[in-house]
Length: 181
Image 1: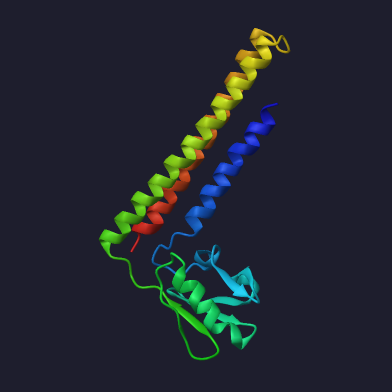
Image 2: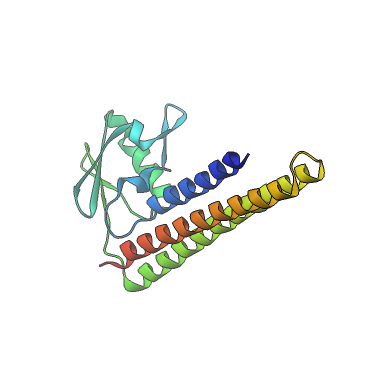
């Protein structure tokens, strides 16, 4: 019974990690391109599937499309995304140069990181509430005893504490990464 709720909490953590990967922290990270889709013959396609992505320098990403005709669509997709980087190309390779982050921008990013962590905590607490509601319902229906209800509530609380702690650790790690110059 509890396994189902643990899986949901794990999904919340995975979602938070994906969101954190898409936040650029002054260094070139190919994961910032994860959500960018290119119009490839009428189909929105992830950039990773239309070219080779590399990080030749700490603050640069290069994208080498497998078809030269894709350079313009890739540039357009990057410009319309929320990455905030303007691509440049030499006719064969697209370059994304990441500027140094200002102190003010770093602080804004840390606020965003904290906001995303808080959303993940709320999601985890909602899963705990759903689990407890479910256990109370089956206890009223006579499927489990009062002791089993209390036991399940304790287990769910332990899981909640574990995942909330994990969210805090991820948040602190990402905040440190952003604030490190």
